[in-house]
Length: 163
Image (cartoon, rainbow, N blue to C red; front, side, top):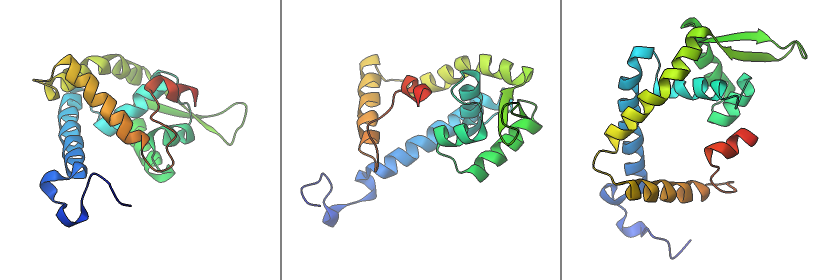
């Protein structure tokens, strides 16, 4: 490939988008993990809680697909959430081979508390950004994601509920 934005002869860590995306994710996960300590949750685990609470997924397979986790990783995460009393598994009455997931009362309470904790953490991480800068950053990241291999575009959160 020629004519790209990066010159292979001059690529450096200081100008590598991959490096900055990795550091940004690390900073956000660390901040989110600290914010979630009162709920005994991690940044990775809130996806399960939110997807279940909003009805976007109801089985381990659906969660794995939506969160891009392999089945083994998802099983281990669900094991931890079940031990914490946040998620319950049960056999489907329509298909006994299928496991269905529900939030427990404690999981439902956590889901209600999450928006406030998430907003506080995101606002702290975005300190000094303007509303316009946030819109620009989000739009650029959506374009970046849409260029991914096999991508048909960057789904918006509402689009994922339909898939």
